[in-house]
Image 1: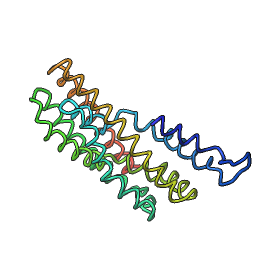
Image 2: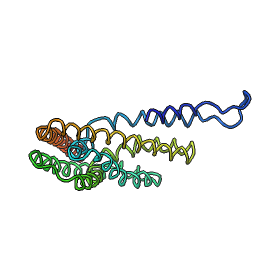
Image 3: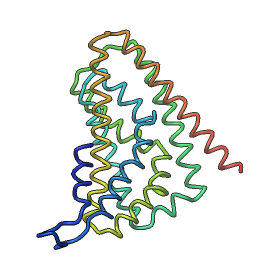
Image 4: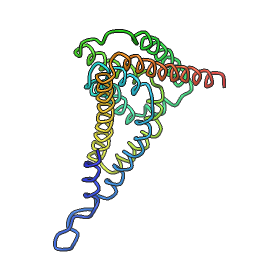
Amino acid sequence: ILPVLYCIMLLSGSMTHSGSLTMYDLSPAASFLVQSVIITLPGLLAPGPLMAITIEKGTGSPHAGAFVTFGHAIVEIPFVILLFMGLGRISGLNTVRVILSFAGGVYLLYMAWKTFLSRNMAIPREVRITGTAFMSGIFMTLANPFFIFWWATIGSALISRSLELGVVVSFMFYSLHIITNFCWFYFISFMSFKGHKLFGTGYRFFVSIISGSILLIFGGYFLLTAYKIYFH
């Protein structure tokens, strides 16, 4: 990611020929792209359902993070497109927020239970791991209401700004976003896989407990959010 950002920053200077401006100044676009990555990093780096399932699946395959990202993108890309059509206003309705938070909370509690149960199970074959990682990326994204809320608020603002700068910048904005996701989750699963190889079954037990706890906390938090919205 850093080399990409460096290249973008190099482009932020005006193109010159014999000491004079000849083309255009790309600094607004470059500044926006750098800022968009910085804005999205805190949410990406913070522990959450996707990170938890990536760590858990990573014990079986170093490539699990890539498949989690692919599953995540399958949900995210259509949603981002729908945001251009005004979906952001609908997702802000209290009724929609209650339904999403409740459904997401229930699913995450179910996944927490399954993760706890898997703590002493043998590692499945890598082919199965990558397949389940892909599906987990899809369902964990769907089960996370704050994914939708983020895109409906902060994400919508970034999309609007990118459109002001042109279609190419909009494409680069989302490309950087998904590349950042890919690199981070691949790194997480790779490190989890190495940890399992180094420490053995004890590491899987530890990861299952930690990942399950994260899913349990977020599931409970989403249900509490649904309760507060509905009764207030």
